[in-house]
Length: 383
Image (cartoon, rainbow, N blue to C red; front, top):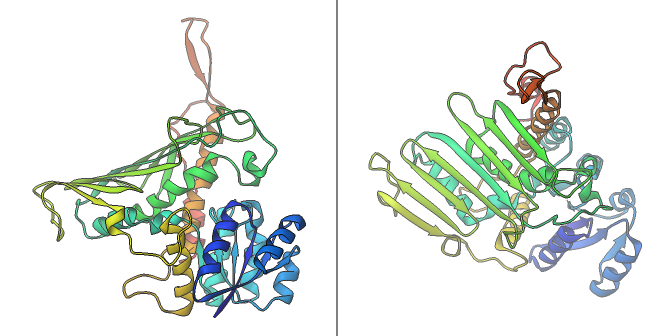
C-alpha cells in the first residue's frame, strides 16, 4: 500500500484527496495546509492526520509520495524538498513560474530515479489521446498548422485579494488557462523554436491578464495560433479545443469528441475512412474506480500510482506527463511573457503630418517581433 500525503487542500487538493482516498492501492497518510481551521475540519471528519508545517510533514511522516496542489509560487521549494528526501511527486500545473527551475527539478527527479508527474489532465482525456495516436500514426500527414483555444467564465468582474488574481503568485489567464492548450501543443508538436505577436490583455483584472493571443513557431512552415480568454461568459465552463491541419487531413478535438477529416491521400487508420470521422470521448474512455469532476482526474492519479509500482498497462509510457515535458511548456510561457514585455516598446503615437498614427520604438528601426528563449535553455533542459 502506497503512503501518500496531499499538500494544499483547496479546490484541486480536495479533488485529489477524494480520489486518492478511494484508490485501492493508496493510503492517504496525512494532509498539509497552512489553514489550521481547514485541517481541523478535515481531520475530524475523515480521520486523516493534519499537519500545518510542510517541513514537519516531510520529517515526521513515513511517505512514499506527495501530491502538491498549492499555489504555483510555492511549487519549486516544496517539490525540491520532497525529491531530495527520495519521494515521488505529483505536482499541479504549471510546474513552476520559472522554466529554469522546472528544468532543475526535472534533472533532480531523473538523478534520483523518482517518478515526477505534472497535473496536465487533458493528456488523460480520451479524445485528446486519440488525436495524439492519430498524429503519431501519420493519419493527417505532415502537420502544418495548429489552433489552440481555451475559453471560460472565470473572471467576469473586477476583483482581487487571492493569489489567482496576481501573476507573480501564479495567477492569471496565462498560467491558469493557457497552460493547458500550450501543454497539448507540446504533446502534439514538440518543442517550439520561437513565439511572436503575444498579447496579454486585461478585461477585468488589475494585476494580471484575462486573455492571451500569440503565434508559436515550430521550425520550417509549422506554426500554431494561441487564443485564450477566461473572461468569456458565452461559455458555461472551461472549453479547450485543438485543431491540427495536415497535408492529408485535419483533426479538431475537445473534451467531448475527436473530429477527423481524411483526404484520399491519407494513410487511413483501422476503423476510419476517407472523409469525415467522429470518435466520442464516452466511447473511448475506460472505466475508473472513482469519479470526481471527470474520468481524466482519476486516470492521471492512477497513472502516477501505477508508474511508481511499475504496473502500467503495456504501451503506456511512464513519462506521459513528466517534469521534463512540463518544463518545455513552462519555457513557452516564459517566452510569451518576454515577447509581450518587448511589445511595450512598440507604441502608437499621433502623427502630426497625417493626423493618424505612427509606430514609435525604442530602437532606430523596428524589426518584426519573433522571440524565443530556447537557445541556452535547450542545452540545459532535462531530457
